[in-house]
Amino acid sequence: MRKRAWTENILQNRSNGEKRRSERVKLTVPLLVTTATVDGRDVQELAETAIVNAHGGLFRSTLEFLVAQPLVLTNLNTNLKESARVVHAEPLATGGFGVAFEFDNAAPEFWQVEDAPDDWGVLGLTGHGDEIAN
Image 1 (cartoon, rainbow, N blue to C red):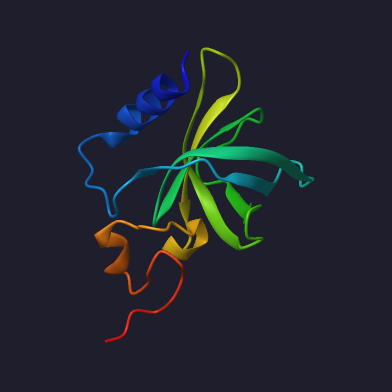
Image 2: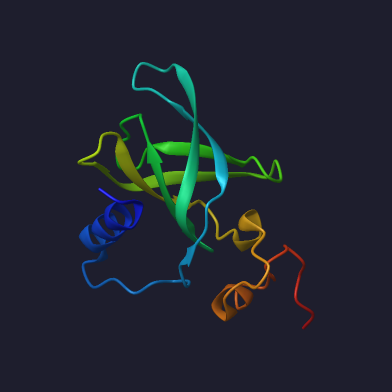
């Protein structure tokens, strides 16, 4: 399955008519994903995003995740860290899992998007984490 196909499938499966809080951007960002297993062990995995927005994103993983599982994500381009939780995870036909996540608090600055969508700015931040003057 092509990258595009797995992302569209996961996004379609979780849409259920819900309105996006912020525009999605196709963006590959290397992440270090840290979480705890059900038996309490900390695990880490290197992953890459496929799609992001100011409120979260989507990555592919070799690990299986549960809905509501807490995550700590580190953007390996900037070393910025954000806490998040899994909102959807499903097995992929090509192996591994597609994992949709949501930040605990909107974090458009985490992605360092040069030309961030306008609705990201409504959150009070530009694409580089600078506060917008009132």
